[in-house]
Image (cartoon, rainbow, N blue to C red; front, side):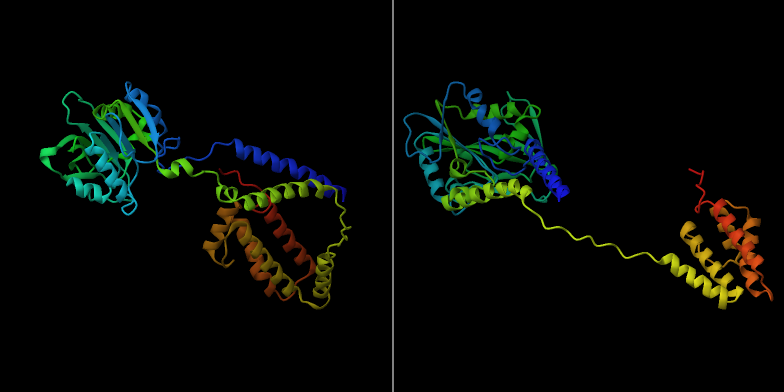
Length: 400
């Protein structure tokens, strides 16, 4: 009982140590495309959001979750997300159209635009015919001759190109070349009312993973240069503001479940602390069954000595030796076979003459007319000498 207590006392520190190690170990990389300004994961927007004062040095930055109805001065609304929900984003598209018509700039970078917005602007898009389950390299450049840099992005999905738009109101700002060699338009400016839309099809360019590589920060700075206004509005998603990322957020949000979780947690901890002192019933000692294999072997040997013939004993010795030879060397065959004898000699390192002598005794001795006890002892001596000298039985091989 004392040993059990010590075992439990030793178990608790081990559990605590494992918990501390798990807590201190760095979490694995999360490749979820969250596109949230507070996320530092590869596909978050933490770096881009923090660089807004550098990209817009003379602008005031404001965060909002709703598209404002009206603004006092020229402003730029920035929306970067993986894709839009067609059903839920239609009212928001109407608000964006109204905001641009008032004279403001709306920058949207996404892989899937709201259909209502594209239809109102007269824009059509098309995905490059590549597998959506693979990653590709993207090469992009600006149409402005003063920006001569070419930017390369890896780990990209198939590109989305603008295929149709009103030419009189549209200015092509950047193009992209896919792995297939096709060149398409991925960044355009469309005048709408007194303002303009800046539509961009590569939101992953602005994620943490790409902003920290090569000269990708310069690409973001050039994009920002097209959309500078006195006020910059960063559009937050409602989930980014209200949703907790805690693993137990569903339980902790409900007061009853939160109290149940606390009671369960502290109850289990108290049980572990007090269980060390609880009294255990004595455990009966169950002795293992007595091994009588030696007595059984002696009894069988005595029966063979009294009633069996020497030839039967020699056959049993031969079968046992061949079985041990098979387990030690993996060889199985007929002792009279010359090829089998050569394999045994090569495998065990014994001279072929000794192998032939032993196998001849095993084959011929049972058929003698008279077999004495001296013959049995001589055969047993030959077998023991073979096993002591052969590799695989008692002797280790010197070959590498």
